[in-house]
Image (cartoon, rainbow, N blue to C red; front, top):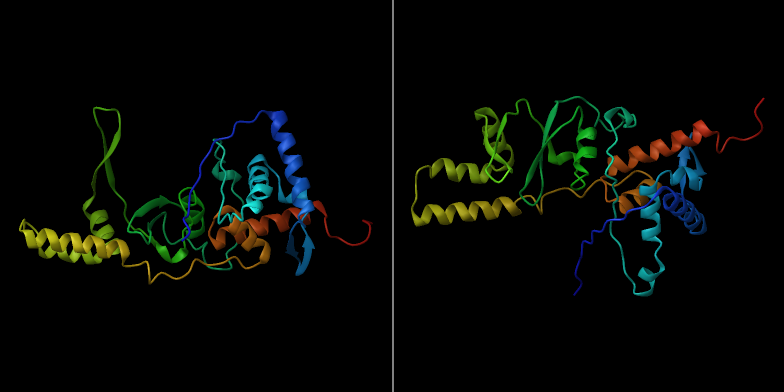
Length: 265
């Protein structure tokens, strides 16, 4: 019987250590065989300095290449790394529209997670929503539903904490019908009923909602390329997000001239 663990830790580096870590990670990447990407329909090797461009990527590479993991047969399913500096919206790369994820259905999306939770995110497209939600987990496009209205009220309690207060009427109705139709039907039918049977039926409905989508959800979409699938496994991101970053690597290769044949005229 195997057990899955999630390990979190913090690393603090100065500029010198960050440079050393990036250099070491690039050497490890090259020694391990590197990676390749499609450029103009032709598979080209990705230079180490194009694959590892920041300290976050370097730390991921060093963590995955840890030889101690191999000694005990440890398999790492997904790893992620974030700095405290969050890139601005203008720093986000342009996205591909081939898979329809860039259509502007709404400014707000609700994500109904398979475990019964839901998240609401402001985004101009499903792809932007998926990238934003990656802070918590890899979301599949079919889990997202555009919202026509979103009104949420919060309050500040005496402990200095922000608490949820209430949804607006239209928003509440949308959330219940979109995320919890089974529970919504029970609560509507049992409104005002405090009997033991009503409480038990509500508990059963909650249990069903938490498990209702687990077996019916489609498998998380895989990235289109081997390079993308490698990124998806390393970062624990959704397939469309991994594909997006593969496109960015290919774009960098083109801008840098890597892979071009002959000499410039």
